[in-house]
Amino acid sequence: MTREGTMRIARYYDNRTVRVESMPRPVIGDGEVLVRVMASGICGSDVMEWFRVPKSPRILGHEISGVVAESRTDAFAAGDRVVVRNQIPCGTCHACRYGHQAVCEQQVEIEPGGMAEYIRVPGELADRGLTPLPSGLSFQAGTLAEPLACTLHSQALARIEPHHCVLVLGCGVFGLLHIQAALAAGVERVIAVDKVAFRREAATRAGATLVLDTDADLASEVRRINDGRMADVAVLATAAPEALVAASDALARHGTVLLFGAPAPGTPVPLTLNQMFWRRELTMVSSYGAGDVDLARGLELMEKGAVDGEALITHSVPLAEVQRAFTTVTEARDSLKVALDLSP
Image: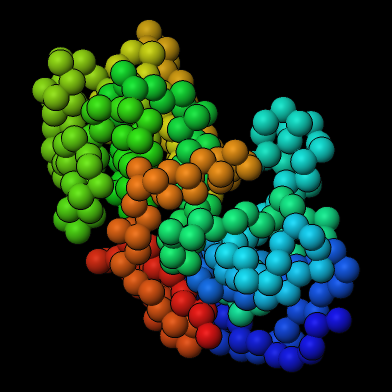
């Protein structure tokens, strides 16, 4: 068995109370893997208090990269660089068998979360919970494998194609990933919208064809750049309900709205059924999580440089300063991806 000891963790209570504490380091048995976490990203969902606080206190972290510290399986060896999936689909239920791993109702969460120095991966989950991290990618970039996988999964559901004009509303990390993923898929016209100048500048660097403030005449600008036509797909990479109105006004008939940002419970739909459907054939698609194929594709895109994960990381914060990291994400000012640095 692994030598016993303690490890540092970040325990979340609420957005203003995230404490560095200690707990026993996991001990592994036959068939299991012990991962030394090197980096753990802070997702926007980690600061949604309506979602997190009722389940707290807990150790968060689902954007994880690290090194195998010890392995009791032939599939991995000590020293292997890996991305760790925190939520692992069962692989056998009806949803999994038919390509819908993201909505598997029997998903298993690896404990603790990634905001801990070590994670134990049970034997039955090692083959599906660990993915090799390419040598050319940093551990910080590895934290974007899961968010990028979610992005790719959602774009597949929205059936984005190269001839489409894609509108991305919200240019935080996910919005920027949507821009890069669409461009990597061959889309030539990607229009980005955000109210924050810092994010608009990031969208320009990400390659967006046109970048607009939220007070722009969106429909007119879309027509101007898209040969007089409206957009084919609108990605809502924001939870702001007014973005749905803007998307509807700028979409062509037979367009698609991709609902990606997570609104708080009780958020009303600011459109009537008549506005959404009458004579328009609009499709509304929601998305959650990702599957194995999406994670593999995301790592491939980052490895070959089609998606620049490193460029999205604005803050790398040591575990000892985890509260500062959460405050940075919560305030959402001049920051994109904030990742915890847990390296020794």
